[in-house]
Length: 162
Image (cartoon, rainbow, N blue to C red; front, side, top):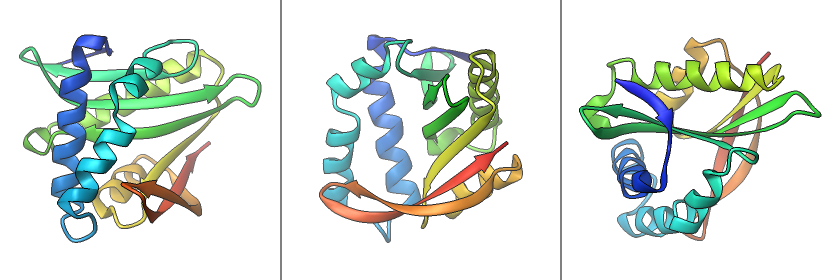
């Protein structure tokens, strides 16, 4: 497996990983319509292209046998020495194989080299596997906010690693 910077050629694969992850992780929380609308909103081509600009964000993909099996998207503030993992998803068929761990470690290393000392991770409050994932790496719950998916509001937790 290779962790690399995403390119425009990865957009469809990123959208697919996000959609399959949401379908697997939130079947009782998000309707199919909400998932479709959320993917169109959060992962619109323009949004992903904007995330490819290195000065603004870091978008990495995990590539296995020439297929994208996961991705991570983070932003940071050098002035505040703070980074934000906005999304980290692994296709359900490739979970429990170290993909998420490798993406997280690469995000941490890349942001650390940019002076980030504090890392925030956002995860829906109902996403138990996501919460467990971050907690196993030492992230601690800090607060809760609201996020919008497909026009509906959902609780989102923020975890921090100092």
